[in-house]
Length: 190
Image (cartoon, rainbow, N blue to C red; front, side):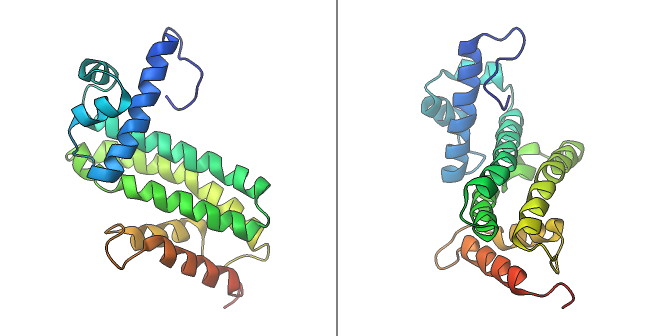
């Protein structure tokens, strides 16, 4: 569940527990990967392991919930940043930070789904359907004359820069910003 409105039939404490578990799992996945012990997630969320399993019967269910929640958060951040930033270019750069942070938890998703190629394809479609339009709107606002790259290509390029995460001496966010700067400086017919 990605919003604060309880689903029909769910008590508010159950919705709150689910939200706490998703938030805790996102933090734990960043720190330790998607294979971190579920008891660590439960402890961080302040719930019992039984409560965690009642909400997310398998690790894959939990990973998918975190993934969807973070896709939704990144999608919602785009319009807010565009509205509140000092310029569309600043909004795009701020959103790239959100996107890179999201990608840190995305790695390991395929392993967590353990060969569920159909489930992975559904999540990929969800990702594309939610984030490509947000990125396209930010690009259009930051570069009204058009760019040399589509929003989908930009997201894929940033994703490729993020493979391997942040290791000593390698900062994918910094490279993503160099890519965006170059994109914004290029001419549409270059």
